[in-house]
Image 1: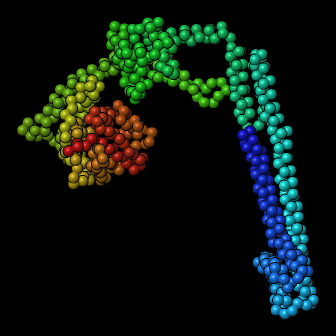
Image 2: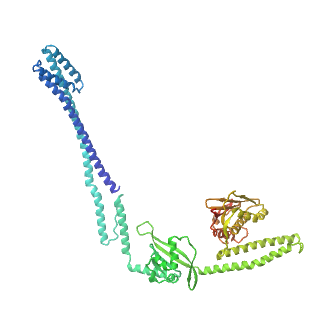
Image 3: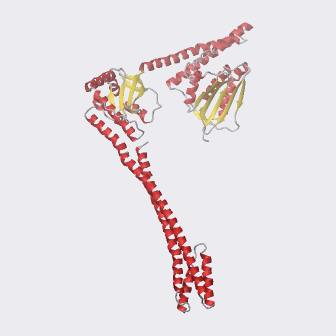
Length: 574
């Protein structure tokens, strides 16, 4: 139990008992006062009036003043009837007195009056005795309960007096003793308090402090300096730029590679806020943008280093530790690693040039072959037999495949070089879909695939490049036809939401396993086990074409049921 709770319970109980004792005393004192008041104001007055009338009977009742006094006391008695039986006695007294007034007085009537008055006095004396007994009982009860309440209050007060101080003071003495040990550099001192109150929490905090002091005391300054030098040497010998920042973005260190590419000196940056350095240094400004809003940027950094344009990929590693004796993770800074990927960029550039050159060089002979097959099929040149026609058809199919591959390579070259030519204008989505359907209708008919469309009557225009978007839809529909079973259906729909128009291409083919669904948009990726031909570039190019228009393309697929590709493009406001 917490100390606060103990104090509140003990003192609160004592306070409640004192309040109860006060209320109880007031109640019984008031009750005794009422009982006493009833005796004095009611029964005592009846006795007084009766005694006055007895005294007047001994005087001359023929005297008018005596009779007037007697009648006055009789009237007061008639108005002071409070007890059982007193009514009838008073009425008898009144009747006897009236007889005394109407006839000549005789000794018999005087005796009757005296008897009546003595009855009233006796009755009230008995009542006074009973009420006295009641008052005594009330007083006894009051004394009993006051003693009980006072005893309980005394017990609680004694408990608080003898036990509570020790309960509080003894742990404090233990703390003082342990603190004195710590002051004497005995850092192995620990407090063991098995309590469920504030002292237990205080003990845990003290032990944590002692543990940290012991850790610091046991550490050797020379050893710490050696370890610091070792880490500094390690950072300096890393052949990639490394920058360290504390939790307040002050620069802790920059190795030689980092100083070289930023064209800075160590004395200019160590201990300085990175924001201040970023004001005059473009590279530092680009790096710290990650911490102030631009965290999603993963594009390589382009820097002029080693007398040429160099590319670096940054990696931010947060420095998080758990201090000794604590459980909460504390962030103490960040380390920025820059990996030089210039050679990879050069290889990528060479690959792009090679792809552009190869696609350009292949295009001319392929078209030449296509023209030759068309001449062979021309009946004006000569008639081919059925087997020869079959060969030319196979050649045409291979030519179309090659042209598709060449086209994809050229599109990918444009994407990688950033030379995509777009004409984004308000366009009717239905026209784009109709164009794609007409381009793939023959292919669907050859496989008996039904193209089922669902388009609303009213649909807003979209901001899109009609040619590129149609190319993406043709690619998606072609894939859906390719991976669908003969006689199946491919569902083409257009829907809208608050901001976008959505194109959907859904097939009922085999579908794609979950582990491959995130990879289908990667370049050159082909689903393992697929026997379909292709370069693996179609979906990657489609993703680039849609995203460069400000849209999105996504996949929903369930293996064994089919796949659905969804294109989202921005609506026009009017």
